[in-house]
Length: 482
Image (cartoon, rainbow, N blue to C red; front, side, top):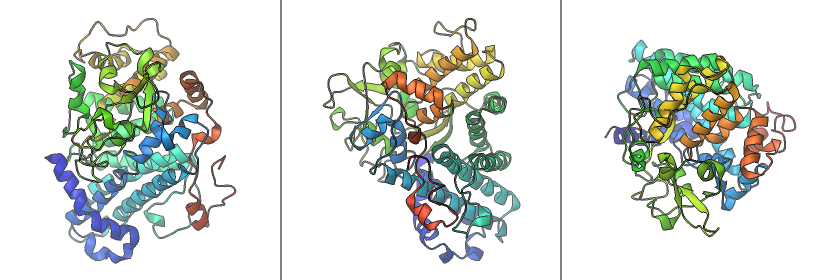
């Protein structure tokens, strides 16, 4: 019920969102941002961009899944699995991602600029809603900087300025970190509506940003704050089907949910990414499936070298011939046989789960101490135990031992566990990128036999941005190779 209420709250905003996008001056600032309810409505509009069908839980996520070492693209996504850059079919998809991220940033900037001017809203509510807007602004910029590099920084100070120069990636990260620190300070630990950003969502985002920036001590400490809070725990699993209690279409929330994009079985309100994984013949998606991604039973990460006793292997993948031979397999992690439409799978899209925090902590702690510690090993073992149907917090027969690991071999072990745990969550490619280009190229080459072209590492800046933003130089500000 909480999930349904949250979706309805977003749905009420649709007409307002159109006004903000197409004719922002039609909303009179002096009459719209005066109350807490009005400001909350404006904040809701920021979520809608992240949940859009063409964003990370849909078409953009599908783009990233074709880049992984465990999944191959098919149809118009096949070229992406060659790792040689984008073609004319895929460039418009990333262009639309750029548009959606900046629309979300613009909606956040409107809240940040106007909430303090409200006449009937408390200072506490102003601080809370600005913190929520800054969390969402930071998250949009985090996606931009990882996929495009340095980008134009648009804040409330440049709200009406169309011509903004391209900033360095370092400057973008400075803004992201500053926004998240403010969000962490002023967001509540819990929200009345499930799916809204909280203090712990901000901590998780900060941990990932630090992790991405190789600031491992900061990443470890921020992840450990979440662990030590005792607010989150892994959902128990004893058989493979129990993972449906985490990823299933009717789940409202779980003990390991830190921040998810909430979905429901309504057209354009569900997880669109699920449609890309399925085939009509499997009957695992009510609208059939695009089977735009697949793997093979000889793939090292998802089948060949994966222990059959790991319940994630059984839950995540199903063998099905899609016309490419008997070895083809499909990811069924996010299944909804009752989805009434392509854009209406009820599965929520995980941004931060407790497993993300445990595995970030394990690797960061290992790097800081130049080798694994008991605390880092236990964090890894909690995820590993649950995968085998064991209680997460009790020693088990599947535990890894502390001895015998170097800093590098333990990092590789955590990377493997992250590869098993985060499949089809649009995380693997970005996880490999933050390890550095040589490591990314090595992993992809080992898994697919293909070389990653340098132009494949970043998406092209949209031509529309280069044409209409006069502060950009098309010959200098376009990413290499485009």
